[in-house]
Length: 243
Image 1 (tube, one colour):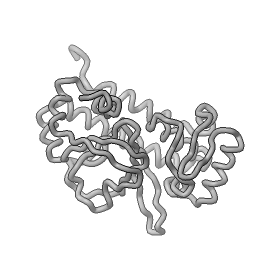
Image 2 (image 1 turned 135 degrees about the vertical axis):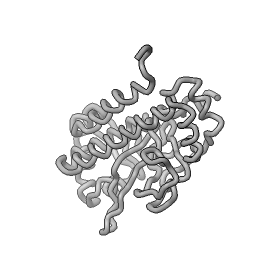
Image 3 (image 1 turned 45 degrees about the vertical axis):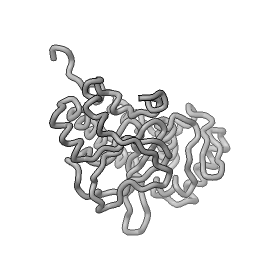
């Protein structure tokens, strides 16, 4: 594996020991997806599992009867899309798409299930990640219900820059509004407030974060709770020696 691939790897797969990783390697296809690419639409058969690498970031969206789309969770190099909670090859419920371009590993879900049967460590890894996905969903529901638009916008931007690993987020005000399930005017007012306070600047098709600490102070603590759960759950991918 060359240096570029190592730098753009999946953090989820990095949790595996070399021997278990070697079981997966022959079946991982390397591909690049662009911002706006759709991975699954509701009703599509989930035939592949995608693992974002490096700065690649995806999101799940739910479309309401009104036509508004609401972002539920972000998935970056810490996670995977497709066949994670289920056994794979079942219809997708939400639309999943690429927010920030990057490289991905892709593996057929049927192949992944066969590999899980061969390797308890790989099965354990994906089972633990499925628990983390549910934690994200639960936290997102609570956040959307009780936190202010400003807190949610700061939380979302913070989560995006953490996953991308850069202070530049490729996103328009319309996209931010859509992901939060709010009107563009609300998103615009929040961003203008953040700009006035020196937290960020906007450019055509993107947002640059100038003060991460200040933005974090404006956010709710939802990202922190999810990150803490990830750290605790995925830390135990392998049983302790003698445990």
